Amino acid sequence: MDLIRIRWKNSWVYNLQDTLQGKGSTLAVLVDSINTEGSCGDLALEKPLYEPEILILGGGSAGLTAAIYAARARRSVMLLETLVVGGQMRDTQTIENYPGFASITGDELAGHMAEQAKGLGAQILSFSPIRAASLTDDLKVVETKKAIYKPKALIIATGASPKRLPLPSEELFYGKGIHYCVTCDGVLYENNVIGVVGGGDSALDAALFLTNFASKVIIVRRHNYFKGAASTLEEVTNHPKIEVMYNWDMIDVAGDDMVTSALIKNTITGEEKSIDLAAVFPYIGTKPKVDLFKADLALNAFDYILTDEKLESNVKGVFVAGDVREKDVRQITTAVGDGTIAALNADRYLKQREAAATK
Amino acid sequence: MEVNVYSIPNCPMCNVAKEFLKANSISFIEHDVASDRQAAKDMIVKTGQKAVPVVEIDGEFIIGFDQDKMEELLGL
Image 1: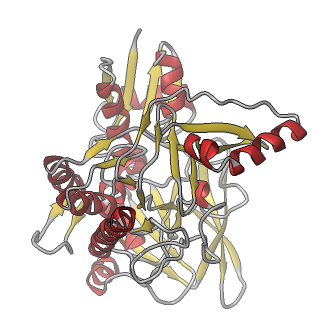
Image 2 (image 1 turned 180 degrees about the horizontal axis):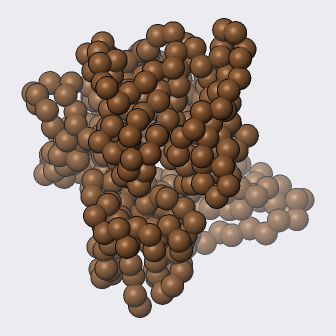
């Protein structure tokens, strides 16, 4: 069974040759369209094709757990990861809420999960960002720079990335005072005043981490409360180097080559003022990585993928796990739960298809 | 080909950049800008930014981890 890829209206369209020979309809229609559109067809497959039973996109806690369960169900499993395995766990210094470990680093926990998945036979491919995806009930195709994948079932666990701070000068000062990784760039601001924007656990953790280098850390908080864990908030409130500015919103940053100040506005009185600081680390939430699935999958108003109780999307055989789907609580433990549910239901879906095929 | 990596210990994206070079069997010189003040100064002057990782391939600077750009400059 060969896969055919054709360029049509500036995007890639996939079809199966046996569909062409058997019913002849879909591809014939496409070929007609190509002729009338005047685009050129490309009927050769120039990359290797892999057909795992289950393909997993994303190597964070959700994807790695799905790989463990899918491999234990004796399915052939491939996992594509854009960078290296670990996802947002890699950005976390110490994890203290994953049962079984009172305290563990993100790298260590990710390493354990990846080793377990590999040991069970899952193939994990790092540095494999996906370039295109086409998902239908009958056919799922995912393409990277080097290969094309045609799995029988797909689990999307691509996760989420930090939201950029919506300031007029954000892009101008990106890397020059606006930074999104405290463990990377924090140390470059030794003995400086550093600002943190946000109200969740990530913002509180970032502020605490920055006290290792900063002369002072200012948390700019739009509301008069935080959403993070009470224990972390207590530590922040009692820290001599941290000042919390409740009911203030950061509206811009300023400086010459590098940031030297931020403009803030009181959310109650409307008063505006400038505060001196050398850097701002925003932790204002995340946005799901769904760009390549928008055409095929149903999303909510914030672009998170909608799923049913089985964690299946609107496309049959496409399951979703972790931060990329619409849900309330986003933790490593809930991502692990999602990975489990998605993999077991993907296995069930394949069993049903196999049973139907033998009838 | 000379490859320099300006990085900080425990910085996730620095580790990604180094892992990528290792996965492609490319040797590189690592500069820890957290402890090596001169390297930190050089990096900030050359890139105009205070952000890691910075990967220098034959005099060209890549700020952050950019797989496409690295593959292009390394001829991968």
